Image (cartoon, rainbow, N blue to C red; front, side, top):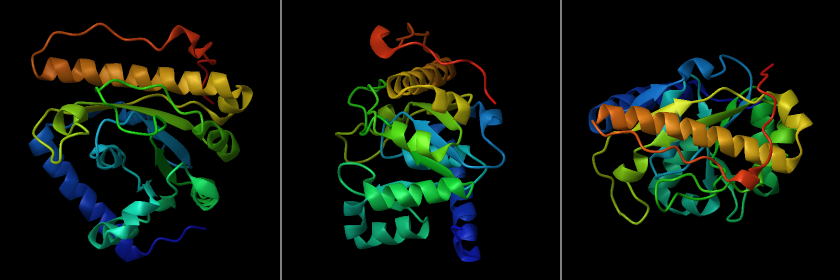
Length: 238
């Protein structure tokens, strides 16, 4: 089993409290759908990717400890290496999980932990949800855990990918209903990727509507997933 020392657990909990206070003050962070987070058992958390802030934002939204993936190159910078090692980040190679990253991710999911993945593969260039990379589907099927969609809006305004530093913005986040392991197993790769993309887009739209209301802007037209993304899975969640 993946053992986490008491010191690391206390560090994570204290860091989460500090980050929540900072996010509430600087970004007026609001999270809906928190009733959908699993209270026990492993889950693969799948979120859209708007900025460098996203891992912290998603981790703060959950009451349980989150496991993060980090590119191996991030371990080259000593101060950041210390931070991500203190959070037990899982090293991944430049092109994806890699064999060691895949094994460690599966091990943590098997031991009933939460793991966060951004299936777009990179940060958005315009704030919208990009088509998902299909690589996560094999992991999702092998893990046999619920798949939990998350949508973030406002983080792109706070820290666009071409800006060196973050600024002030209102950020909202929504946690959607999970896709059960049974649904994931019954779907082929194309169906599973399409369903996860649809749910992430729906979560993003909910977060965007809430954020625009909060800052006094009118709603915008919902941008549905492309028609070729395939049929929906059953709405049943085990």
